[in-house]
Each structure stands twice: as structure tokens, then as C-alpha cells.
Length: 278
Image (cartoon, rainbow, N blue to C red; front, side, top):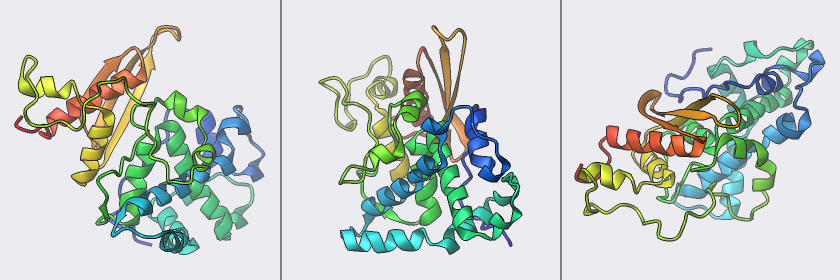
């Protein structure tokens, strides 16, 4: 089967052996993650795709009512589409199993793909899931301006402590926003903010991750963050890279992932020339 050349790149699962084992090792092998079911249980991970599909449908234009959203979600999550994505990304050969019949079992294969999506959420944040799944469903979809495909300034540690199931309890599809910023945080940046050293850099200091990620969505590009820490556990140094359509456009450093991610996003925003009157 030929791979669809238009599908977005597959997000990677990195720096977490337990999570990798949870995704790529079927229960028939008899190997379980040392982290146990608290974080990496397959049923929990499988909820992330449903959240991403709901978020996409909620923000798709023209706006749909609840019944239409449920119908569309059912179509998107049908066996045929999920199995096609598995083949397009060549994920089946990567699954370790002692029971080869599961490859002919649509239910098992769907759960495998759902689990991979959940692992992307755990290893990164919901922005990685939303920015991947939205163009995978429909790369030409028109989305509402308030489609914010990120947990914005939340760290990966926070993502691991908050399960997709708990976020799914809200009656309105979650926006994955971080805790409210301090009072005085400005609205989207107008073109006449006062300079600070230079007009672009001064305005960039006022950017939030919500604005950066929303701008990327509006411009139809894929934005991702990849980061790692070094140094002692009590005093780490984080380095985060901001990727636009798979290419690095910004790097940030900080004492926590949140600060490094924000700096990387701001640098990428400037690199892409998105700043008004820059």
C-alpha cells in the first residue's frame, strides 16, 4: 500500500523507555512498564485521540451542532480510517507481539494507534497531538480563531500528571490552556507597541505561547517543541527547540521547561517574520 504523501509527519516518542514499551509492546508479550498503569496504561492513553478529534470538530468552520459533531467524530474514528493511518505511518511492523493474529484484528489495531496518540500527548503536550491530528483529518479545514492547539505554557511533567480522561470530563471541549497569567497580561499584540531595544524584540517579550501557537494555526503551519534537560535534578537547565513544519526556527534556555519553551517560541515567531511591522 502506497503512503499518502500529504499526511503530516509522525511525531516522535523520545526520552522515555517506559512509554515506548507501553506503546510498542502488546500485552501478549507479558512485558509491562515499570511505571505501571498509573501513567502509561493503554486505555488511558487511548483517550487523547478522542479529545483531539473533538477539539478539531468544535473549532471547524462552519460551526456544527452537537449531533453533527458526534456523527463526524464517528466517521473519523471508523476502523477504515484508523487502519489506513497505521499503514501510512508504517506502524504495524514496529509492534512487538506474541500473538500475530492481532494484526488482523481491527479493534486491537485501533487501540494501538490510539495508544500512540496518547503517548505523543505524554511525551510532549496536547499541542503536539492537535497540530498532528487536525491536518491528518483535513489539511484544508477552516478553523475558528480561538483554536488553541496547546497546553500553552504547561510542562511535560504537568502533562504526565494530568490524564486525558480527567480533561474529557468538561462539557465543553478543553482548550488546554495553562493557569491564568498574572494580571496585566496584554491581548494579542497590536502593531504599535513601544520598542525595547528594537521594536520587534520589545514586542516579542509580550508574546505568550497561546498567541504563538494560535498564529501558527492561522498560518497553516505545524508547530512543535522538543526539549531536554541537563545538570543535577535539583538545578536543571532546559533547552527547547521550536520546530516549524519540522525545521528548527527558535531555541530557548531556562531553569524550567516552561521558560525555555516560551523563549524558543518567541524566537521562532521572530524568525518566521510574524511580528507586525517587524
